Length: 274
Image (cartoon, rainbow, N blue to C red):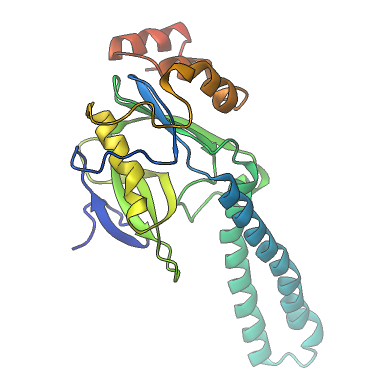
């Protein structure tokens, strides 16, 4: 059965239901939680360094390879042999596409800071992200964005219109990724994606989704002190994770909004459009 969210995402395994039927155990990516909001880290530093090295090595290696293919086509093919031209052009296009796909991976691993946390407020039903523009599941991009490697995406979403799906990475390690599909209100049409829990093995890929669902449903079984920072350490959490990362002031204040009316007051205070 295909995904009900359209267009279906590449590597789709299954759609995830919302609710409190998931395991409530703490996850090592939980940074902080209080009665209003929780924060999950999405980038482990060791993984970030590993993938940065791998993708950087491949990207750097592709540059001389593409140059060699161009030389073969325009310099060394002195007799203009058609089969050599076709081979050279085909190989160059393949290398260029690979380079186009890899560069965003280099950018997002290079410019992601402090784990790129995602914030869920269960009182207002809002979700907040402040991430590298390239930290997503897109393939087609505006080529001009490649000249802005540290470009950010800072957005507010409605939890009601976020739906979870799991995809695999086509490797022998069976790593799964949980993605939030941003749907057009009251439809299954996808208009955006958010990476929730990248590259996990097996059942681990469902842990963050399960904990978030229990949190957003106000399930009392979850432990708000199971994260890296305890509930009473909010000041320390914001100082070490949020401060200096470009989060708008209104958004940081909105983390703790306890109702839609309070959120509206915060936005009005900072002249933010509803």
